[in-house]
Length: 251
Length: 208
Image (spheres, rainbow over the protein chains, first blue to last red):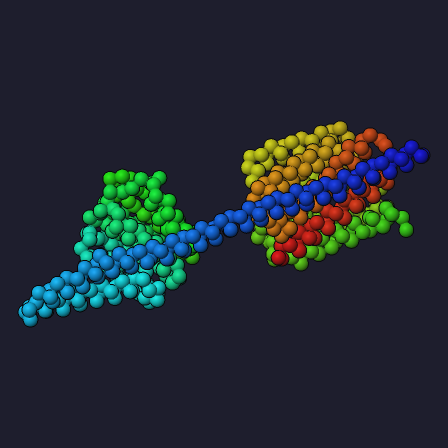
């Protein structure tokens, strides 16, 4: 009888120890994994915020560089030309009229530049109109042949997201103008039922994707795309131009 | 008061509570594979109450036949559910064949259904333990593990895993004729309390 009771106690003890131990082990394993994932997510978030802060500084610097470039190479040139005309006009009404026209053009450029920089203007005009404005500016400057097409039914995108898409394109345009020596640029907006696909291609000299441009320029664009949950890709080969693609799902 | 009696009553109460929870939270999980637990728990409650009534009135002397039928039906329900959450594909048919073969073996060996289907139950225990391990190992590699306590399936499988971790050694020992009927009854009741407790938490979590 005693032997049987001992067996009974042994079995109860075994099971009553085994069951809570297995539950505790399971919770410990899950908590450990949960904490590890939380740490990893915090690290990814910290890294992303660091990259974001870096790219914001870079974006600001880049914007200032672009304004400086526009003022010097475009508007500055027009005003200089007007000044030269006026200096040599000797009250010649034809030369004065030409100068007035050049100053008028310079003023238009200042307005267009202001619009392309000011987020409020972009907000008011919308993405397509802002891109059109930018394209018209390039056409006026006769930098290259531009083809801009919009296909599909235009979908509404939140304003802040439109601004980011526009800034990505601006950075790409700016790099094309400054570095690519392209003579043609094709830009296409393709609206699907719930997505926007943007393809922009130039016929410039291209670049080595392992190089500096890829390091900072692409990182900036990618960080901006990440902010709006869009997919961004840049393909380039030396001598074969550069292609930017952006895919954004619109919910 | 006798511990066995107290535990068996607590077991019945928690089983009924889990049935009530299944009804109460039905709208939260009716479109998920968890729906199978609703008829299963209703059947479990009806089965238990029937056994109690029939035993008390003397119509039956052993509930084993009822438990054998219950074990087959409950395993089929669990297999359906695990197939939905683990995507067992063609494996489910192989598992079904193995389980039915084990149950058939029991039927042939015992000649009657009044004995517990031991091989069938052991097969069932091993399979459910394996499913649980697979589920937990998959869950550990998913991001949603961060909020694992909010996943209803986690609680259902935790209950099943805990139950079968305790039940399997018991099942193996009953064949060794150690005279552990009382222990078997006490332990099964405690394990059932944990199992149905986890089910209740699982149903509660469906509302979160």
